[in-house]
Structure formats: C-alpha cells, structure tokens
Image (cartoon, rainbow, N blue to C red; front, side, top):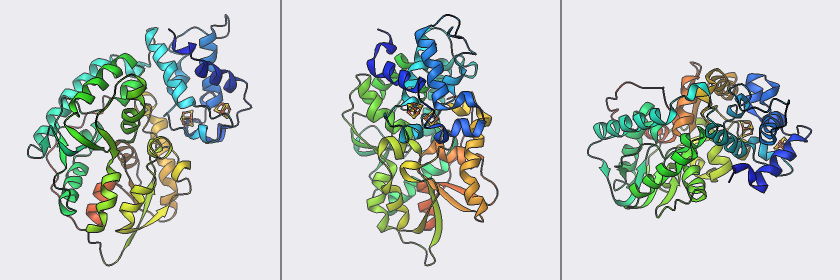
Length: 384
Ligand code: SF4
Ligand code: SF4
C-alpha cells in the first residue's frame, strides 16, 4: 500500500497546495536560505505534484524534483500557525520514504544505511572505552546519551554522570547496548524499513530497564511516537534527561552569585515531547533563566533536525547563527539546551561572546561539580 493512500496525508497535501501560504513566516529553513521553493506550502505542493504524477508538471521523481523534500528539519513550527493542524514536517518524511523506495535520495545521503551501521559500531565501542565502569544492561533507571553526545559531547556525558553522583542518582547507569542511536536519522533519511528493524533491536536492548532517560530530543520523539506507529512496543518508560534532573537539582549547591543563562528549547522537545518546564526547573535552582524571544512551544529551530546538517549544511549553520544572534546582540552569555544535537549545532556556530552548554554540563558548571572529560577518538561528521 502506498504511504500516499492515507486519507490524512493526501488531505494535508491538498490543503497545503491551495493554501495562501499562511505559515510561510514560520519556516526557519526558507527564512535562512531565502528560497521561496523551501516555504512549507511550496514543499508540500511539490510533494503533491509528485504524488499525483501530473504529466508535464515536473512530477518525475528525480534528485532535482525531490530536493525541496529535504529542506525541512521537522521542527513543526509551521503547524503552530496552521488552521488545519497540518504537519508538513511529518508528511515530508513520508515523501522522503517514497523517494527512497523509488531509488531517489539526496546525494549527501548516498549509502546511508551502510554509513549508519558503521557509525553505530564505532560509537558503541567508543562509549564502552570511555565509561567502562558506568555501563549496565539492566536497572531501575538507565541513561542513553544518544549518538551525537557520544560522538561530539563526551564531556556532556561525563558531566551528567558527575551530576547524578552529586544529587543522589548514582544508581543511574549508562545503557550498555549494541546501538548508540535510537534511529531518528533513519526515519529522516527515508529508510523506514530499516528504522523499524533498528527500533525493534533498541527496544530489546532497553528491556532490562524500568525507565531510560535520553539526551536527544528527536530520538525521544521517535521512541515515544514513531516506534509505536511502526508496531514496535517499548516496555521501558522513555523520559528526557531533564525529567530526571529537575526533581534532584535542589540537591546541588549553587554559587552565591547566581549567573543568568538563556535556555534554547529544542523543537522536538517543545513541540512534540512536551519537555518545556523541566529543563527550566532544573536550571532555575542554579541560575536566573532568561527567555529568548522565540521560546517554549514557539521556539525556533537550531538547524539540527531532519538531517539538514548533512543535506544543506550552510543553511543549517545559518539557522544556528540566527538563533544565537539575539544573545550576541545583548552582549553574549551562556545558552543552555537539553538535546545533544542542538548542543553541537549551536556550539559550532557560536560567536566568541556566546558559550553553549548542554543541560548537564551547565548544571555541573553552575554548581562547581567537577567532572573528568574522557579521551575520545576522532569526531566523525560523516553520518548521520
Ligand atoms: S501547513 Fe497549514 S498554513 Fe502551512 S501551507 Fe499547509 S495548510 Fe497552509
Ligand atoms: S516542519 Fe519546520 S522546517 Fe519543516 S516545513 Fe515546517 S517550519 Fe519548515
């Protein structure tokens, strides 16, 4: 059965095609790129033409005709301004899956499944080498740092473990599993069959834990919503890292002079997972939390979702720079976020006056909690 035979997908594509572009201002990809063909209405219209296969309307599935399908981080900001609650961020994922079925992918994602598998092997070995004494296959609460944290944020994992020890959560262990990523990148790459296969294996790896806290906003969404949609049922409760840190944060002693920090809401946390107040609650024990102009459910994407850093890296970086421009204009400071991917995207685009910190690292720094950064292997930006 074609994914397009779903009434909901077809209806959303038709509604967007004839919409007077009511959400165009909300899409950070079109704003950062300056391309009209990347506004939500134009991307949905393009997918609708491909779906309907109208002769002579650019409806052949080619690398060029499918390019707009990849110009989306799945941030869901357009949905916030849609009278019909349409979901371009999810419908475009369906379009990517159909494109891959037809043998068309983005050139930057060639051989993606093999690259994903190789990275999984490298990162699981890397996690075991970095934290050999903190891994477990079962327990009450497990900690799943996510692939971007293992690859580029080893200090954030070390900080989280140090904070756990300080606040009485020393029983929380890193999940020892043959997987490092919960699979959202496979979904974003259009490899839905592989995502389903991978999700089943992750679910089996987590079976020994009652609850697992995860430090990746997109994979939290994938595990909660997309696993079930693909028929994979988790026995384990999945929560965000902020969910377990917030109740315990009062056990940390803060500096006498409270620093002011900004909080960036990861869009998957704020608009899919409902993780909005817990990170603020955790931080507010230690610092004055300042709001960015676009915040909470109206947050603006940092550019890290939807594999945009792979398919359109310049646009993704521009989105991160736009996100930090407000802090820079106010004289700089610390920007805290609660997702490993957001941390990496914002860090690599931060001007000198802005320090970007993952939630656990910020909490460690603000409470003078020492942590030792493990030696890591070479960071590989190749995939996902
Ligand atoms: S998501 Fe809603 S507002 Fe945006 S183009 Fe589609 S129908 Fe219009
Ligand atoms: S989900 Fe985000 S990136 Fe995708 S079309 Fe909507 S606003 Fe743009």
